[in-house]
Amino acid sequence: FVYIIIHHKIDTYSYTCMTSAHPQEIHTFNGIEIVLTYLRANGIRHRIAMADPLLQKMQTRHNSRRVRPSLIMFLHGWPDIWFTWRYQLAMCARRGYLAVAPDMRGYGGTDAPKRMEEYNVFSLANDVLGIVKALGYDDCILVGHDWGAWLSWYVALMFPTCIRAVCAFSVPFSLHRRKGLLTHLREKFGDSLYGSNDERRRSKFNYMLHHNLLGVEKEYEKHDYEALYRILFYHKGVECTCGTPECTDDTMFPLSVNCDYFDASLVEGMWSRLPRPIDFPDWCSEDDFSYTLNEFRRSGFLGGLMWYRTPDLNWKLTRHLDGLKISQPTLFIAGTNDNVVQTYGGPANCEDALMQGCEKNPRIRFFDGYGHWVHQEKAEEVNKVLLQFLDDQPSIDQKCFARL
Image (tube, rainbow, N blue to C red):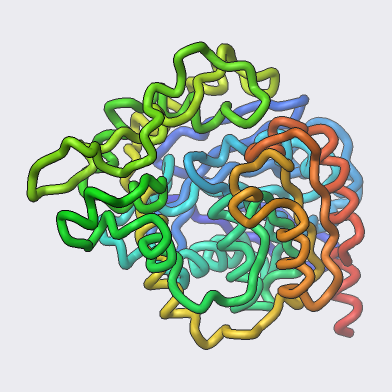
């Protein structure tokens, strides 16, 4: 395990020990070293990617003064790992922030508990807070994408003194639903999970419900390359291979199925329902893709899919938050062609949800024509927007002196 000791001082900070049974893995982006290491928090081992301005060879506004930098924590979604934030980690370290991106619970090098209940919102929130504390901080700014955005909103809502500001990609905050998400989806698309045989045969495909079927992780592992390739790179407007998608049927199970046992082996997954882009995009090389693919081949898919099995549980656990709004400064960024944005009814509906759910007027930026992974697709422009937001937040020094 990694043991990290950070001296608590207003004007200086330093790591005094960082050792691990695992050799440290170092990636370099835009001249910035990103170190992968391990720490233990909230009862499990986490792999974290860390871009520390004090460890860089180049000059930053912090390493010249030995000032303790603000902590920015990046939370990824599905199907991703820390690597999705490589462009933002490098940018933050160059600017003088301590940028950290864990593999979330169930992904990559972080432990993946086998019980669905261990992926409840409080366990996930305590992972985040545990990492913050393990790094010697009392608070941080959260930046989240997809499920990471959802978690960022809820950590900020439940622990407002620990989260100074929130930037969310793709998933806007909305006030507490009247019912659990899975319940809503089963009513909308048909009960493919718990319905009668006839109900299941009539049910429509929805990827979140599909992720709840028995054995779905094995289907992803059999089709891992194609699944990740299409999910990561397809969005509206991308040039695609003729003859794809192969499956155009909108039912969950084939109409011809005639059995009493319904599991994921009977279903055509997302990989056959999405068009196949003809080539890798400019923002992700084949080597970059191979890194993410190999991480999923090593860790498997089950842990990440667990996040799709707890929405109704989390709805019950957070009923006490009904009506509460986000009190921190907020930034929302998304592409207009993001399928998640479309499920909310488009950019205007996302803006309405944010205005209703945030106490302070949120900053909102849509990138026209871009998709779900806008932080990679449009990294340079996204980084400018994100950096302006981060720079506008009080520094740790300012906060400390404000308390005196």
